[in-house]
Image (cartoon, rainbow, N blue to C red; front, side):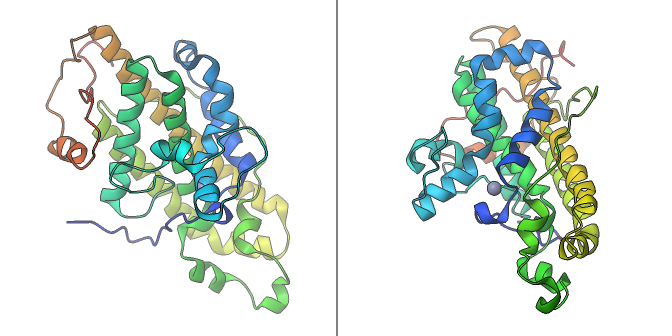
Length: 301
Ligand SMILES: [Zn+2]
């Protein structure tokens, strides 16, 4: 049975309804900058494109697939080129939280599993692209206007005579000040892929709930063109997204590290059985579950 979230989190429908390019890049960079060096080296030359290009793949996919628009900047030139990273084998788009828990957990589990598997197979280019989609998914889930329906958002605005030509939605999420996570160290979100995905999703939902509570103040600031106040909310949402992404990435890399240390042909031993729905999740997909190395070995914490 599907559990619906009380919050009417939006289906992320397109580039006009999401963080703009720079916020996505800043959120991704802030998270990546906190990773231990041994994990950064695993990405090799893919760090720069992960920050500049891959964290935008879901938007670029929608632009090309739905509108036939191809950006002039470096990156993919066709939707088919990046479909494998943005669309699950069962056809579900991975762009941001939908608010349907089963769907969102499935997307996170899928992205985590793909990253572990492609890293294990020494394919950092693919792993980095999945990481970019993960960054986008988390960031858009915490984009403040996404916490309510478009109708609800419009209803918060004063009459149009007072707002003029302001697009409330894009006014809130079009920018974010530059930021870092300082000395924060990334934390493990769970011992295996499924529990980590559940923990990460709860944090996305909780961040969205906080955004929703504060949206009336953000709308008021947007209508008053009060960028200073908006920046406070943008920073809070962006920093939280970066922390969640950093922890998700760190967790995936720790799991992959355990798989590598276990050696070829020796999948990581499990401390306890994976939740049953891990196996059932992967059965919905056409791709093989690739040994689903979902649990850390006993010696990895
Ligand atoms: Zn987006």
